[in-house]
Image (cartoon, rainbow, N blue to C red):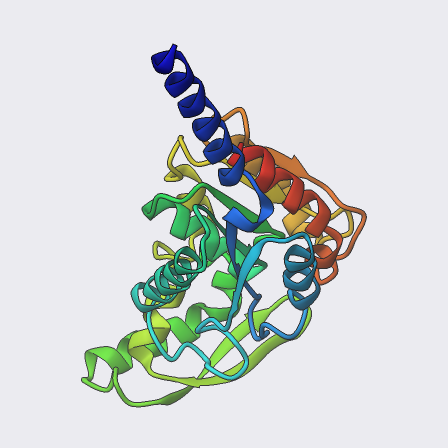
Length: 262
């Protein structure tokens, strides 16, 4: 009889632990903004909405922000996400997700292709360096940066060009070494390459708003179809614009993370 009650108690403890693992408070998510943005702009409502659901959130400033202008390379950016995930673990998260908007959405997929997390949320991913538009707009600047690197000036800041769909081309002041690492067509920001390299065991929530930029809408289905098959991988299409997509998606993102966590 004592053995029976001991087994029963163990079963209740196990069940309790399973429930604890799937509470919103046990789910942590790193949120990354888009090109030229910041944690206080288009992803702010997403971050606060997820926090209101009880999730642990790290809304971090990335190297492509308006303040940082590619001050470090992609490997250092990966380390920043690693550190943010570690902080979430310390706070009690045992299910970990990485979310990003626009350029952050592309980087989220790159990160997911190299690191094991519970899920990736890519919101209106853009800024793929392999895209025809980016190569046409920035190909000359990339060549200029490569020449500066070859001349031994890769560590000296220079005035170089960046491109964003709503703004067009504009100047960023950064080191050519870092610029080349971010804008290499075969590098970290090659969206198609990252999608194809995604770990099959990592589910992806691909968010493409109905009123996104035409080029991103055109690539929507092809990008989704190229993801490795996973029963939890989903395409979500909120009725929103490119910049409004993060705020419009927080309910679905929370629901999906909880589905994956369970």
